Image (cartoon, rainbow, N blue to C red; front, top):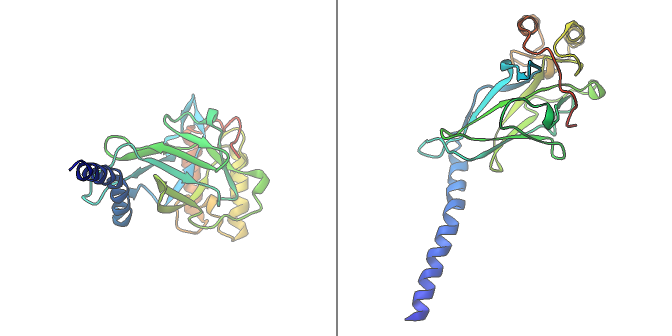
Length: 217
């Protein structure tokens, strides 16, 4: 009788341990999660506040679908060769964790399953000669791949925020006809005059007056 009781207890314990893993696998198969855009914009800051033009949300849902709180949502920028992200100290938006080693930025979902990002970053002058592919950034939820997004940046030189010098660099991308995704602000896989209009709105907003003081990579 005692042996049978022990077996029942062990079975119950195994079931409890396996339940989260089974739920995670099921939720990964459902993938009812959504993102606010197919592109994420790296921005500057002004007055210690990240430019709201860079706000990006990821909503993690289960199979019901309901939002799942407490999930770690991670952007993996390791394949985005021509942009970089400000170091942890240069990220004024609350709740962001920058990992230089893995080139990732993470946030935790709230009670509604929403993770919010507003990342200070820029085009990397040292690697500007490279062309990052479309959808270079991967989005994970607790290690499960949800989606990919393209990365662009208003600050084209990584210093002094968004200024006229960045416009000159954007024009270089425009005339190159390579359609670098870093300068494609309307996220249609083409660097064209509508992107210039978006850049101008950003410039005159004065919401990206400063760049990151240091970069994570």
